[in-house]
Image 1 (tube, rainbow, N blue to C red):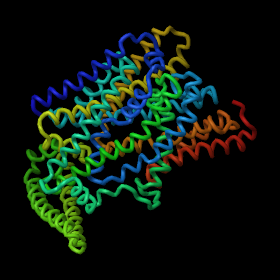
Image 2 (image 1 turned 45 degrees about the vertical axis):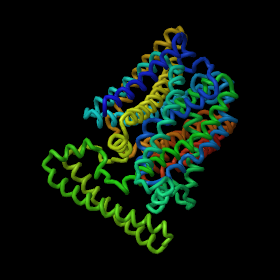
Image 3 (image 1 turned 60 degrees about the vertical axis):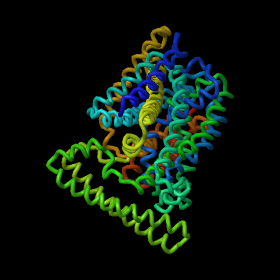
Image 4 (image 1 turned 90 degrees about the vertical axis):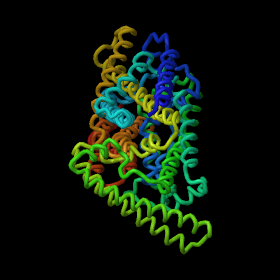
Length: 565
């Protein structure tokens, strides 16, 4: 990057961190540190909720997902608006009325300590692991730009966020989230404009969409019901609804965001606006990836987008083999450009026969390109068995670094970093608050002073930061980050949601039945995943239903009488 890009990057990130610390000055007690004294307006709630979910994974991996697989991933969010309605009606009033710090305090009041501790364990495990992925995603950028070892970039990213999280707590996080989402929205719109601007002069936005459609990248909605298909409208609405309901309703990283609302109405409005804005935002991000795909139909694309690994190949014993693959790739690129130009002309003439012929040739070209890429991946593995061979996370980053003008590169890198900082900070805060409120204060120090709990919260934040950085060291093995983080969530969120639904709606089911129902359900979810019985979104439905089913069976067969909570 140029010196101007570095100035833009450091200036943007520095402003966000300093602004968050400044606005959160004067934090005095645990209530202020963990839930900002429930004093924030709806737009803070909305942007904070969005920023917590929109990590660097969203802005690195989602465009790569659109590039490689098209628009169908947007169906993942179709259940979100309905989930926001249910949360606004049920969860928010209960949490506000009980004046809890975490969602899991309610479970002990409704059931017993076993249910609370089991749910807390599931949350800490899932959120701690997924936060490690959130740290790894921006670390890719530093490793690519600076050539640093990924271990040191993970440590750097995880540590930077700790500065304002430890110093300012939830209030600092919320104020930085507002700034982050404003910068993110502007920057991604500019990125989409620039991709179209860089296309050939005779190719406009509509022409680009037509090319993308013929290449199978505008597959937005799939009405075919298939439990083994990861993304269709049914898995999005049903499976996505259960996942989003659990994530926003029972994950402390999100519950902690809307508990900061100054009233039930402000929290509700913040969540509802999130439900309305999230799908268009995700659509835009995926569309940028699709437009990058079209750009590379007219321009040479890297054989492999992870430049760190290809640079290693060029100086290895496999350099000659790699050079031969690059020559094949260059020849294929020229043929693809000819085919795309012919396809565009055929569409202008409305010559359907020629369109079909050129479309088939384009698909054949893409198939051969995948074979060459697979050979490249095999070479990379031979040269470096520990290499990250899934380059979907590098597609957008490589385009930004190679093709965008000076200044804009720094801004877009800052966007990815700031998004990462927002989600990581919220995760740190939620892990710390759950550890202190649900474990430390409940089991070890019940009557300590406010200053003691405030200090303990900061120490817990640092401890979880160390853990998440350690997890980030192994994240390169998981492929597409945006899929990996949602698969990970699906292993736990359905069961957690089932526990809360039993608490809210099944008053005749007691603590022991719910505890064993949840344990058996979690085992069932893991078995389904290991057996590859269904696409991961459906695991959320299965987990939720199994908790209710097993709890009911336990209550009325093993217990044989209602267990009064």
